[in-house]
Image 1: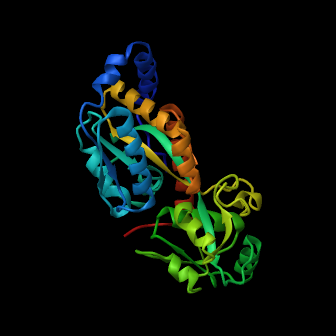
Image 2 (image 1 turned 135 degrees about the vertical axis):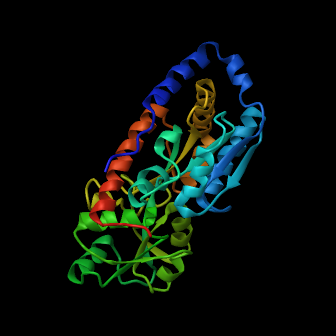
Length: 325
């Protein structure tokens, strides 16, 4: 399977456009934005991507004076939102705020998609989303090693939940099981799965840090590990899974994309605003409080990351024969 291919010309063009904007672009920056910006988010209001997108939007409005209208388009593993932006006018006033499913997982589990990577220009990866491996606070598994020892002794006897087939919480745990050389039974959910973990109807699950941290601090679940390369500040006593399984990374991410054909000065202005927001102490502190990792990388670095991310998840999808109906 090949990785989704973003137009490298457009990505490189953003870098030169940004330099031009710095040199003589006061007028270009003044020209954009000249009206409200619609930010399409493929999740319901109140979810983690929605909350962080609105924080970004508020900061964007404070900087530019133009409102950011968050348009929640949930459903179909981000496909509905992605299609809406792919078909939008390429003028910088309709943007996609999305996660890894859109470009790193969906192309490998769906036979047909109503969009392709080439329909978009990546602007910036705003942040990384660690997953927290959780079990019930009453569980007998006190450490990740405890869990994996039993999983090895009893193949497929233990269960793990996810937010659905081919969702990030599914493929990330499949990746961990592959690396550990064990197998468990996958139980996909359409709604919240953590209550069943708490009640010990499910043995274990990956949950995004934004949802897991409050449950850990409330004493409802026990954290066995985090999917990021290092420990996170919000859970300093919880080991990174990579400490036990070197090289393991299972994080998701949030990124901003524009439709293909968006003018390069507009892309440069969006990048400059986004990097300014991500660099601000207030925004960074808020993200870190949720267990999120600020990034704010430039488009060429984001492009390289997307290609590597897609290759990695494609291997997991293939190795585990993950398919959707």
